[in-house]
Length: 109
Image (cartoon, rainbow, N blue to C red; front, side, top):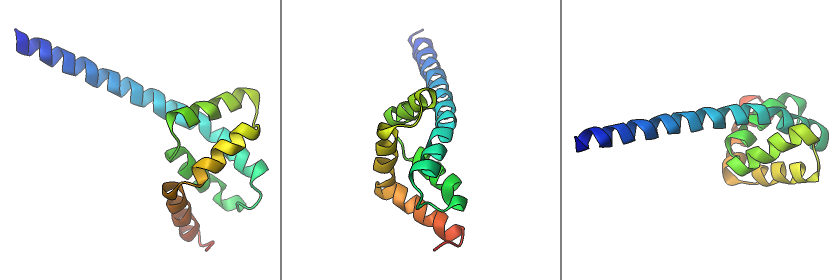
């Protein structure tokens, strides 16, 4: 009897984890438009053909709180806080590595 309770709990936790992952993926997809707009309007040094790869690198290396900031900006518009968040994520070693790879892959470097 006890084993069935444990199995039920593990199954429920797995389902919650899958739901959480789905919510996170949906939020990240929604945040891409804001990051793309921010790069296009506030970071003129980013070549146009690299905006999408840079966006992907930024989204992939953003925390849940940063994703929430992007989602909020989707409703209120890009502001200085959005720009600061994008800039902070861009400065991370993991993001820089991703950006370098995108640059080389697109023949920019």
